[in-house]
Image (cartoon, rainbow, N blue to C red; front, side):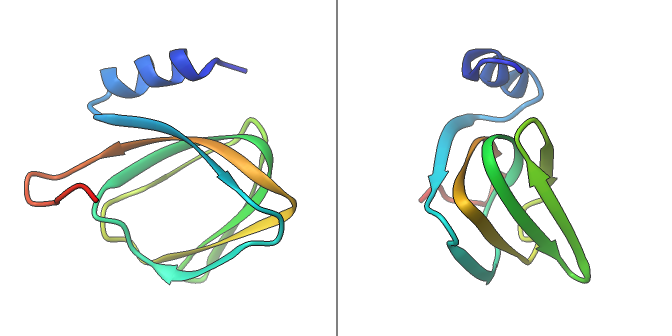
Amino acid sequence: MSSLDSFAAESRAAGFEEVLERKWPPNKVLETHTHPFSVRALVVQGEMWLTVGDSVQHLRAGERFALDEGVPHAERYGAEGATFWVARRYSATASRG
């Protein structure tokens, strides 16, 4: 598995401006929402379920996912929670917040 530094370098080379580590507590549920940025992420610990429309992805350590800006989605985290590295790319009209 790659390091956060190599993930950040790879993501910045692909045009993503911001890279950070997100940690989610056990059994956390985030109802359907959107983000004002595009995302690419790598799960590094635990597991999560990502729901986009009728599609549900069960993601475990070592697996990646991506979402475009403004795509409605829901997130659910497993019994151990989850940690993932996320890269964000903001459009010219999006504000960081």
